[in-house]
Image (tube, rainbow, N blue to C red):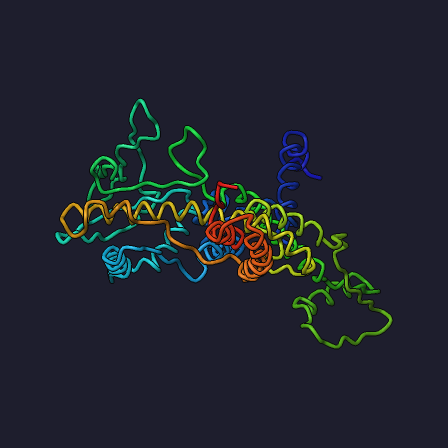
Length: 410
């Protein structure tokens, strides 16, 4: 050891040791990757709309809700012939095409919790309706004395309109209506049906990614080659095996060399129960049973029927709420037509709620069975003089499900 080495050891030994340790760590890290290391999820800051576009479960849940609520479409049971003709023309107008539009509107409601509808009325009184993306409305002005009395809505600015635009509420002579779902009392905006499941969708994506990484690591291996000989023999063999043999190769050697495949000993086990628990949380938050997500093995036919009852009640409630929204839109369109004389002044009050399709085929079967059983009892009651024919007819409609209540007289 010369004078330079002595001086370096005496003055800079700690610096040299730190640099060597860092260099070795960098060298080692080139060959290893951390299994399950923290990684950036492209949807870490996702919204329900981003999840709908990129997450298969969010996409499927949204369309399950839309498909069950709207089914094959809605009808308008309008008694007045003139109003029925005008409503059909407005509904089917090429610039409206409401049969398609109401599905887009329901999707917007599910994803954002809000629906902002604008009216563009022509001189003949026919209104062209459009839905504005909820993200473009950044402020809602209300009556200071009544939070539910919405006065105007501000559309966020764009390059062509930097200051944005205020839309006056249709209830105050303007051209916009606002609807919301999942809105707590005292709040102006609604909440997406997917809002509560977004964290679990993110966790499920991470869980699946980890399972893929673990399975990849379990199937990976390296060759450990033991060479019996001098250091020169080891160096020569290392140079010869610089490129690993491809899969399926035949390796021939003598007793001076030993080959062994080394795999990662990862005790991952089966994680089926973990994945199912996360999916169950997602399904519970979305209000649907697991077998709605094509997991038929999670329930028998009988249990699936019972498990589906709360979901059908939720769908029926959404039909009722969405029907009231569509009725309000139709009444506003009819009111504008009445203002220019295209319809009588009382036409808006004649617009009924739309009629939605049955949620299941079993509904009609249940109604038919109930009617068949009730007819015999009502016929006997009429024969004994307990009720009149008119009362029997009213009770029959009630038990058949066509009226919400029966006669009030005994």
